[in-house]
Length: 316
Image (cartoon, rainbow, N blue to C red; front, side):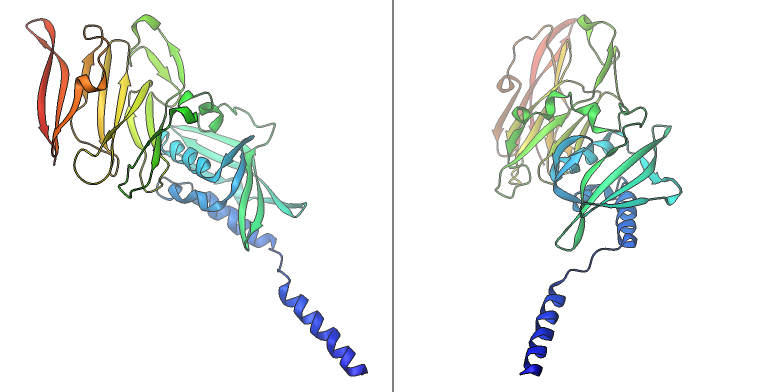
């Protein structure tokens, strides 16, 4: 009986020992953070979402993992030369309430600018893997309004959900959405004559179309700071909806017709002189007129006068 009782105790001990999860070591924390840091390149950045938890406190705002990925995409769209490194590879790791707090100096370079930012990550463990719960800057970090941080994009109205355009942009039969991230305008010389020459923007006056489907790459439109999206439906019989981008300026509207699956233009931008040809709608300048055929109407100057001219384009 004595041996049976001892055997039972050993059996219980073994069962509980087998179910015990071995705590992650500080060395593994350091390895994870270095891998995350090294993934901040133009090529690798599209897979950064794998490092994050479902919901992240991202620079003092709550972001979903997908929203973090979209912000990283935008960072590299605006600054393709962006790099970051951990100063002296020094990471300070502290365990706080079951999570790991990692602090370090992040050295960044972009557009010829170099800067150091005291930064932190908070890590948790999900299904045996590290995930980032929080990412941000220390309170004493300088120049937190730099255009590489998401706070510079929060005021952009195109981030709001009511500006999302829905459609099947990759041809899988499911609904996706697209939205535009516009640049932050810094100065305007004359608001009555807005054009790309009189406006300066943080990081350049370029807009970026982002898609909810991660297989679709962002599309950058240079010189565009005010815009509107259009779902043009399937124009080239590939099963996916094409996307239209209106580049809106004071005296012109230009419609860009993109194949969302590869980001290419199906035709030259359709330009309307809105100072002369006012109140034109999409149907007035763009129509699908047959299988793989569209008719476009644009403003052209003939004998010193602005007129509307139409032409048929066969899509390949």
